Image 1: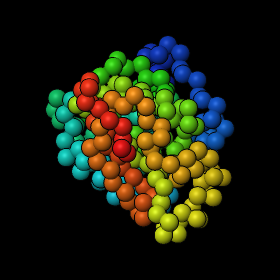
Image 2: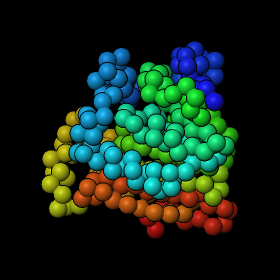
Image 3: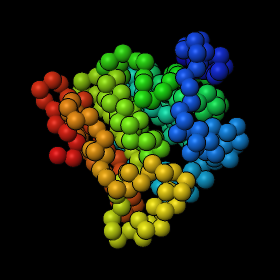
Amino acid sequence: MKNSFDRPVATCVAAKKVLPAIPQYLQAHYWWAYVHPRAVHVFERQWLVNLILWGNYKRLCNAVLQDYGHYLPGRTLQIACAYGDLTPRLADCVTSNGMLEIVDILPIQLENLSSKLGSEVPIKLHCMDSAALTFADASFDRALLFFLLHEQPQVVREKTLAEALRVVRPGGTLTIVDYAPPSRFNPLRYFWKPVLDRLEPFARDLFSEELAAWLPKDGGFVTLGKQRFFGGMYQMLTLKVAEAGNARQAGK
């Protein structure tokens, strides 16, 4: 099956008629990392992504793949592109009857991702806002948020989480990998937070509170697993979308 994003911008226009506007917070705070044309040339380096995560990129990717059992039947949704080899590795796990779909609001990021994938991989790319997905309810068997939430203001983060849970079918899963409140014995708790305050102002939220603070208050999910890495500074939270009448909030 051919990649459906061989011509990224044209595909976006055809799918949406008008490209979604780039959010102001993304332009203001992340132009240097994702929006500017030179950003891809600077940050699309495996060693650099690993360095930014203090050597934990491969470990966190491995945790996701192991949680999936290196097996992705049905429809899988990755919400936002990621630098590095995460998506190609996910694509390698897609079964013959499966499909991996990725959404991102930036055509330049989708174009970059397309260049990392073979032409025969079972994948579709969509130019779409994570906080306003246009997929129908219960469209996917699983969804993944990999280091996206710390880049979003609280209101957008809450909408992204609600949308991710909405498009996953009952019994399906939402996996979240991102920052977490580090242990008080982790020296980076005191060094890295001020750096992020300057470069990524919304990351402070995830350093201070648990993800449960931004999940929908009406529940609709159960917690399957919660792992911490690197002295608690990173986390992987796995939620299962529950059947009606069988739900509780994460962290309870």
